[in-house]
View 1 (tube, rainbow, N blue to C red):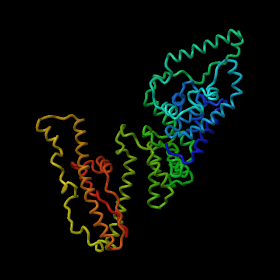
View 2 (spheres, rainbow, N blue to C red; view 1 turned 90 degrees about the horizontal axis):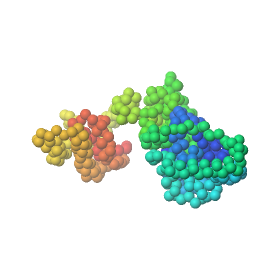
View 3 (tube, rainbow, N blue to C red; view 1 turned 45 degrees about the vertical axis):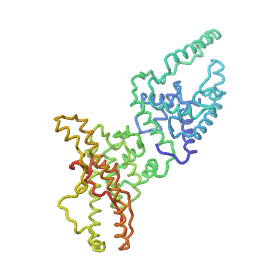
View 4 (cartoon, rainbow, N blue to C red; view 1 turned 180 degrees about the vertical axis):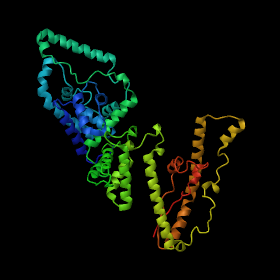
Length: 481
């Protein structure tokens, strides 16, 4: 979830939504009200059937009484972003709700001897809220959004509560006689019985996170540059390809239901969204940016590319072979090659080689240069592999994979040691050359470990070992003329 700059708006938005969907005005949200809230606000972020709503209710409801008060709702929605100030505002609002419903509840509480959750808040005896709450208590409450075996209260505690309720009912029946039967309200049929043993940890956390992300995007004010901001801006944009206007709404659905940091939603399109059409919109928008120089599409493109929902889960198949991904990658390669060719022509046309002292013209390469041509790996590189062959041992696939990872990472570390050792010399010479023709030299940092590591599975996947030796652009400089 993204941070929100306006804290007052953040808490206010949550309070207003809570009160709007508290249909009976009792200061609490039950199963039916939560279902209405999720289906209205979360919209196409998911189908949100009764089964999923019950999961969310369990995630929010810290005391398992089937209803959610404002602080429980806020703790679940904000998670780790719930500050002490936010919590104080929520508690203050909750106390006002308790005060507002106290008169209405007073009569029924006097009649049945019970005390509602909001009444406990008012008296300061609630375990989930009240002025006496501490940060430690709140931190424990936040943990409820993660799976805990046995979401219900311990069996003995449940039984004790039932026995206490039975005693109250028996006393009332003795005093009021048959009148109890006439005034007794029917059991709430809204939430059907559920076998909670069927809920595993992954499903529980996935649904809870999905619900939180969906509501967060609807309730929180859009921060400039955020995914929400991108979705709002996209509403006023024209389709990048006039011949395919229908693609626009599918890309918008992906932005409106951005997965945030929830990788569990990888490859899961929002309800009603067509992935192929969203990818086509993305391709057309990239062309609009590069060819028409229209920067208005940049923010939506950025957040669309960064949406987990748009890309298949790698565990379910090689995403790098996905046709949509390959198509965009080929587009990027064509555009980059075009940019390179353009500046090569400018380099020759303006005779920059002569101006810069014909740098590199005396170098000849029969093959593409590699870093291990002169930077020879240490003698122990691959020693285990040779040792296994000599002994006739056949390592397992797991051992081979682990050995390969260590071998490749060892060379990257070895290479980077040399790269950083000579970078200051490289930058000094580069600066001297550039400034000799009235240019400006800037020194970006050398290529990093993770960049080299990522290329092992992409650009250098088929290279000979050590594959990282293919990185010839380790030391870098930017010249401006």
